[in-house]
Image (cartoon, rainbow over all chains, first blue to last red; front, side):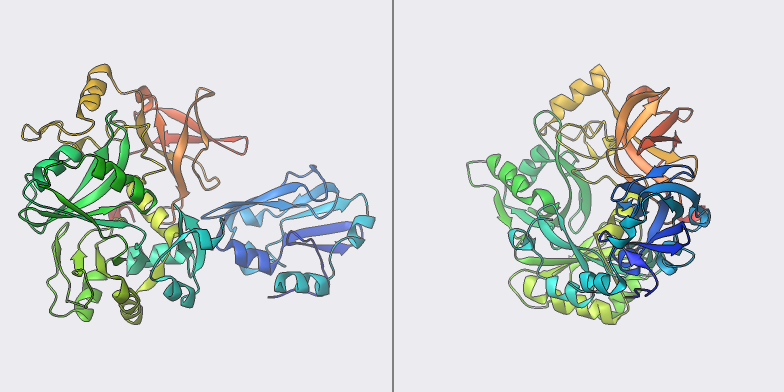
Length: 126
Length: 371
């Protein structure tokens, strides 16, 4: 399983990429493999307030709908429009073109509470 | 999921694990939901061939001088017309006309029958059947559910595959049944030309100890292992009902649109369990009708228990739903007031609080010519 070293991870299998005060959110390679063929993605709305650990998006495989939890608290600034036409990007490029939304985090201390790549690697190996 | 140890296990389980199956609970059974992926498996069955473990389904034989008369009283479809070595889809109803199970019955001799019942209600079905057996011993019922392993080989290449594996086997016609080459064991191996996918195909019933060998032979012939996930999308594209989702004790076959599988309009069919209730319902008017629906816009995959609305009012809920892999559209079935079972009806289906426009459509959802 791919676990990029430059990201932080939530126990619920989301990742964040921090660039200044902009944070990109997606799901991990492990998550997409568990979910299998993703056929639908419902990102949050731009401007929506999201809370750490609360549902921010939904992705659906043929068989099941899965909640995606926001790793951080803040406001959604952009959503990945490419997912509506091609939700399979979540499977094929979960850390790249399959990103789900960007947000402005209001509490940077939450980042420190997320898992390091090493800790997440241990978690998914269990 | 419940602890797998509390579930019933297929004789093919080790083969599934070898094939990389994801296992889930289904109707009290520990069964594969998918291997390579539901979309991939679905497409294999529509374009080539796939195989499903259906060992969870039950096999029951009914024999004896009173077999036909008793089955006529137990099942909705008229049996008298069924020729030896042929099968038919039929239903078993309670006294209120509610569906206990839908099943396929094959006539294997003048007074011998082979019934294939649903996995999730095997015990209930048998209990019901035994409670109605005549006391005079003229009907002999045997539960062979634990003696058989069963595999459904489905897809346009099925006949080619079967011929390559069993060159001297009699290949039955649609809805027919024949003896498969003997593979040993205590029960006869059977091949029936039927299925639950809308494609040509066969259901193979072999003694449990021969199940894994058959699975491996099919695998080596290039048949793709398919799980319950694609079985569900394939059957729903055809509009085939699933007992427990689309059929239940709370609905009659008339509400489910299965009139032609009841003998109500056949003068040769006598009384059967549920008949009076069906006739009463026909006279009084149906309280609901199972209605095929399609989303008019791209939307999330439809699933069961989503509210269906007409003019902003909830009029029912979906009992089955999917994002059709063949059509790329949301499809569903719902029991709705009969007045809404009409082409012009504008409806909405609510998913997570959002309403998506939907429309009545006709079955099957998917036809080969629609591609």
